[in-house]
Length: 283
Image (cartoon, rainbow, N blue to C red):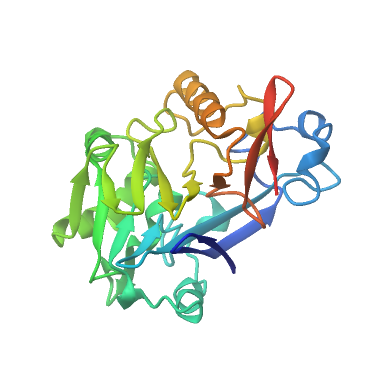
């Protein structure tokens, strides 16, 4: 568990999975030859063999008035095509409780986008039915994002996750549809970061002069800060995703804003600095 303090806001990381290697399916061009010369990635984000270290985690944001979960990982009991993500029986909810954030204390769930590894714990399996994991929360989803996933016909993991992790909270009347620049509360607002998905958002936190940005998937790994056109196979619009990454890095460079990567391995956060024609993460 990692915690960060941003003014009056506390951000707690709850890890579902963390792994070294096995990520070429999402970042096929992040080869050892490409990443080993980037010495600043070691040891936290790349091992000595050039294998990427990555994480799937949720972030609990405690403001003075709300307890918010940003993205809800993969979830238990869900059939997926990626073996390491299928039919999990992990301790995520116990870990959430151990961190002092039991599920019935959550007021709000923010979905940066509706990919399979960001919505899984929206629901849980109870008596063979998918029911909302956080029944006292409002689930916030982008209007553009939801419309896109409702229109898709492909029978894939994203369709399965829509059926078991998105539709049940819609049917329960727990979803609020938002524009991409919505302010959730005084300390937290959404930032439009499209490309990975049509309605992708990141989450900006500001309190008492301190700031943080939770990435979502506008980037998956810090190597994309150094290799700006390094694509993700999951990007809906790779060219727009690359423009978004550069735009966000240009905005953050030279500031004290803490960038918290939704898939960054431990320690998961740092500050953006310029590194030649590209960027790097300083812990």
